[in-house]
Length: 382
Image (cartoon, rainbow, N blue to C red; front, top):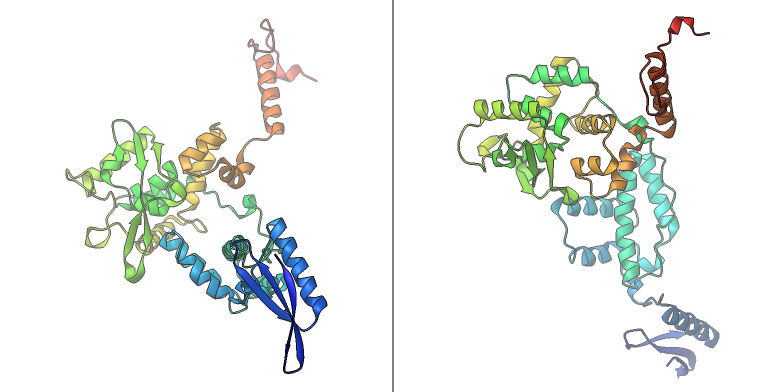
């Protein structure tokens, strides 16, 4: 039950507002004027009834202080911890009490990152990470709403403009430059199986079913401090089975025979120092050297994953097939990344019309015609 009580001390009158929060705890707050106390209790009562109640004392905690408490309870991978810590440290309002945090604080931070030359994608990632903290504060009823909601972010480039798709000639040249070493098989798994760099580095010989022509992706390699590597499950639950082309299976078999002979199925397909998987920096150095030798510029190892996806789409694979092959958690991720590569209705119309025209000109029976038509000499057409 909420109430306002008059208090007098040393000749000074104050008004004490009392109420019980949703957890049944007795709360109080003093005001210099009765009207302010009554207005405050009206706001508190409305918040309790609507489910939007916020403890006035909780908002005194700073953004960084709340993050420290909240993040300690989260089940995160080490890469997520690093990304979240980086985003919170970069926030220009990390020492601001949550009750005083406004949309303008977030807007000023976004402007500062943009002025510093950070890529739109980097800014978006950091803002999303910080907003995850703000949403948690909202759920804990520390603040009434997320002040970062609706903040305008720098416009990113269209995916079709930003994506680099290597040509078959470029992939062929890089493979030729890498031939004779272990990098050729590494490149092949990225280009013709769509594996990420960390996934390729974490493949064990036993993951490859040479007779069944498939590969099980069940771990990845991440960089750790001091040049070390850390092996963990694939990102976003990307465990999957990839169906391998016969030629790729033969290439991997030759790689094992030449570079990784033995009988232990848990031996790494590719090895770095101390019989551990190769470090990302080592792979990157060898990749750049192969690109220079091949005369290829502007292509990254991750671009080979796009090359693989584009090949599947060009061959007529549907969204779900491509999603599963790439290990995307959702089909929407696949569509958002590669929708511009799928044929449009206009493309399908043109192909259908082309098929009809070819059937007529060559005198073949088509599905649109019940009987074969005589062959037509193209040169006689008007």
